[in-house]
Image 1 (tube, helix red, strand yellow):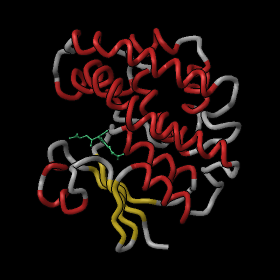
Image 2: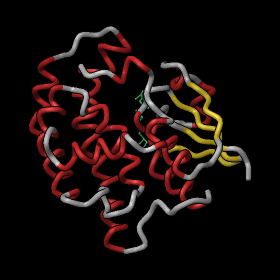
Image 3: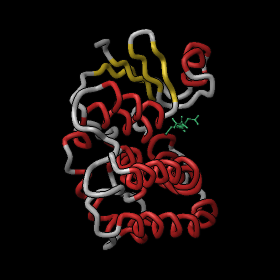
Image 4: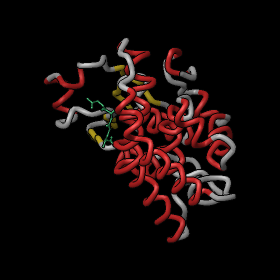
Length: 216
Ligand SMILES: N[C@@H](CCC(=O)N[C@@H](CS)C(=O)NCC(=O)O)C(=O)O
């Protein structure tokens, strides 16, 4: 099989989801780091016309959009399936991936994780407290919804690891480092799930750059 080449800015949670999937499948890959800003340049835009992270290349096949990449990896790589066979569990997994892309990332990841972690640590910016405060109701709603779905299951879509865990873990791992994330998730099923996910070899092999691993 052709080698997987993964392009992304180190520290991107969407990038980490893709790397974790390849690690779970024990599929070798080559990571090509992209410098912040380079993703808006002409060369990168030829691979990703919307200038987002990540992109993969597999032989002459180039693909962007994390959900599509995760499903492709699951389809073509050996190893345990990362999608439930049961239609209801599969639908729940797909719903969770939609929750990440449509609600968690834009409503919580961008205003809370960016303000508290990415901006201050990577860009030397001070958090805009008004932006963080305004996101609080959405953050509480997301945490409640995800806790309700997880319940007493081991993983988000049931008893087996799925693409939903791989897409949401890097996002919630960052959120859990913020005071808002700790307050909303501490002592809940999501906290135990985060610990379980963090212990996986795929999570350990794809740790974010050192400064982004510390609580703020
Ligand atoms: N829908 C895209 C979203 C990816 C995304 O938003 N990635 C962020 C990094 S975590 C990004 O590219 N940010 C750079 C920017 O917005 O300029 C996907 O699923 O791959």
